[in-house]
Image 1: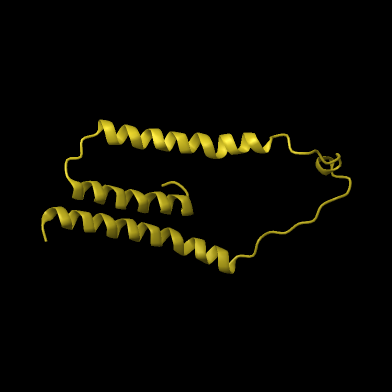
Image 2: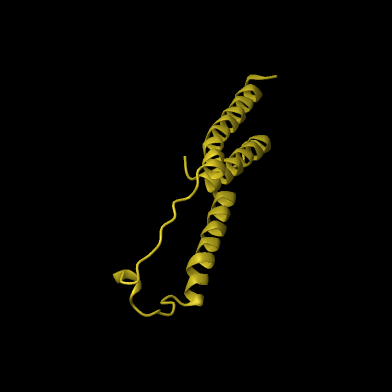
Length: 112
């Protein structure tokens, strides 16, 4: 193995170790710690008021929640494709593989 491959494998193993160390306490809490439950009081000020319909329209949720992020992602990827020079296809693939792993673990366990 070359030094480059050794460094890549050590990074992947380190990421996997960190991911495992984070997943173990989450699993323990999920399986063995019961959630806190409490009741409510009828004279509670926060629930005494009448029900209000949604204040944010469905169209606004779609635009802000989906359309804007999709457009930003497409613009960023277009910029990266046009502005950045691909030095080596293998490095490009490795970069994406490690990036996908970091993003997926971040989505599952929160940002590192």
